[in-house]
Image (cartoon, rainbow, N blue to C red; front, side, top):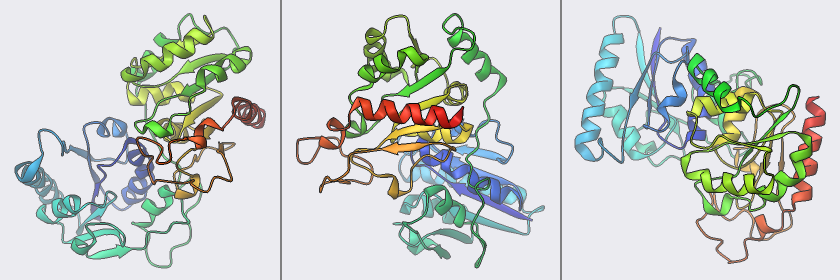
Length: 346
């Protein structure tokens, strides 16, 4: 039996896309995960996760002292599992030198990560980072033995586990806002990357309001965007921003017919709960490996721009100042994509 450590301290979407790797490793033995304070709640209730260590690498656990403290906690977990596990392996889903050093300090003699990672010189096993794979498959490949068959769609499906409390919170958000049989259309207009925010969600809501109730998903900081959408279609919008946990937001998205989102975390929540998405790609492209995984999903973006893609994540400002990758993507095109996805799901 193997004791596995998975270190994933990247963005929220990366945590979701790491759950197929965790599920694969759980077949071999207990899996302990290191995640950030923001990402750790996504793993709550996951039966494949034996334990979680929260690593606040930019806050309370920053610096060498914090690294050493977290390494000691992980070492204790490894030693506790030693009487049951024949080997202990660390999987570096987040490839920084700091993550690799953490695994080494914690006493994991076998450390697996990508050939392209900054911390690769501290790895004992290096796995090719393939640009032609979805990131969920890339992460899954960290645990794949040499010559393994490609994973099935089910093996690559992310998994999240909203609790009873999460479901009850969603019930409270929707109470009094939806009619019997009225479909819910979710929109997630925000992104931590400014250039990845498509600017026409309010106009889209006006076009879609006759097809169902519009549900705005996001955090507390996204309330102004939700207010703009609500003002466009008074009485037709459910503003859920800041009212739900991450798993509660996943449960809300699960109840929707379709989600319209930027290239951001809500897309991956939707993949985990099986809700098809229309994902708007601007400075980034789905070919980077971060597109939707739910069936019937689609992506939209402006083709023919020599400057696109311009960044792996999305810069704070358009390098050329015109932001055409988002401004030129029409509301009609996105609305048509929503109709096509909804028809395929029906």
